[in-house]
Image 1 (tube, rainbow, N blue to C red):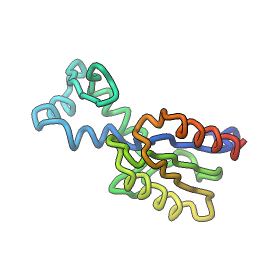
Image 2 (image 1 turned 180 degrees about the horizontal axis):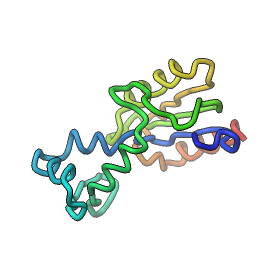
Image 3 (image 1 turned 135 degrees about the vertical axis):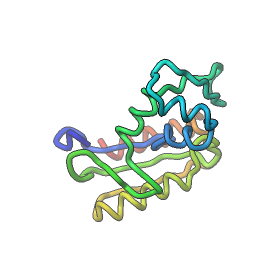
Length: 150
């Protein structure tokens, strides 16, 4: 969004919008939250994912970076750096996504439309698709969306 002269479209594929805040609120214990908010940046917590063999590190720096680029708070658009969304936005999301609920993407699309009325925003719910959207029919839908916007 800092380069509206260069960006001609945005495609969100299984978009994990503001996911670091979600992890912070839903998965970390009070002790872990205190450490993440503390002065130490060396504290690392392992966060499991059904899509990875190993857990991934959640650090203070990751949390802060997520906050620095946060888009929504309570499903309200709070910041899009340097201006408006002036390009088409497409969200493709799996109906079986167990990481990010479809309703979150819907709420974000509605909030974007409310803030930037007239912007071409749509959501395609891919029946049976999971968070990875890696099935043949998912890839086909992604490629069709790219063709539409190119």
